Length: 102
Image (cartoon, rainbow, N blue to C red; front, side):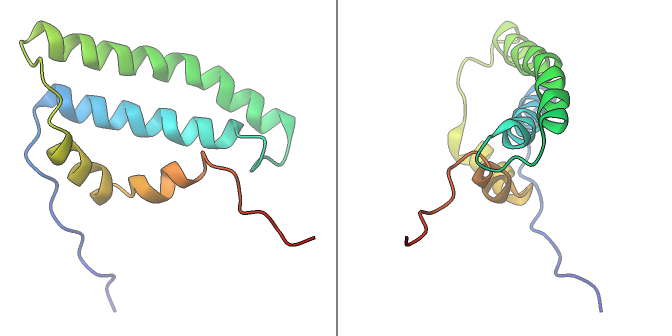
């Protein structure tokens, strides 16, 4: 049995697609650095080292959008793309876990 088919990505410019990809990579790395979800310092260190390069890629994607005259972020379209790419689950690693009853 095949998994359910994901909805199609909305139409994005190349710069918007690079923006979304770099943003999600940053989110993933920040989730690995989050001390509330961490397991070891080495994994967090490796994620923090990689974060620098991905932050530059995010800046470059936004710079490209701006230079091409893409002065608006189309939040509704980009939100749909984030949802298709599992952005809600990925961003969930940035938060604190719920309090446990003590």
